[in-house]
Length: 159
Image (cartoon, rainbow, N blue to C red; front, side):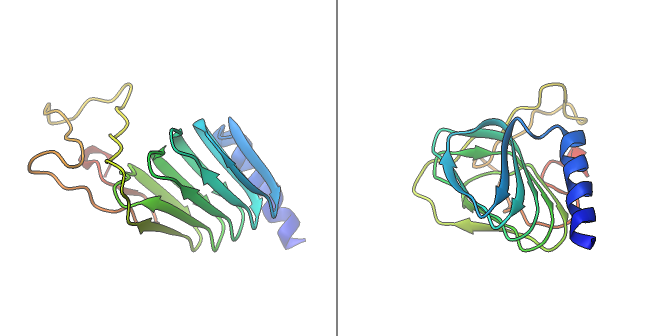
């Protein structure tokens, strides 16, 4: 009963969040594709690989024990977790804007040989200070790795 209720709540949340543009729904599925836009992973024990050239604006994972791996040259800008034991593996030079976490999950950074992926430019946001946002690797800036947990953000105006 508890699992059914969790599944129902997770499904409703997924539908309300609108992250089913590229859905991966099921149990024990292994897939590797190019994705563009939002990617929703719903279910348990899935292995999803985001191929080089992908541009994922929001990765939403709902369920338990899912693993998502981003190849070098793939872009992932936001990660949301809802569940436990989920893992997202990204190149160390991938700059994730924000990570939201409900449960015990992790973002793992691995060494990369590819050049850094530029950050996604916000469509309707402007910096509050009036100064332009710096991209990672620019002179005098440094990008910090994303950690799963709470409302983490690396943009000053999001805090």
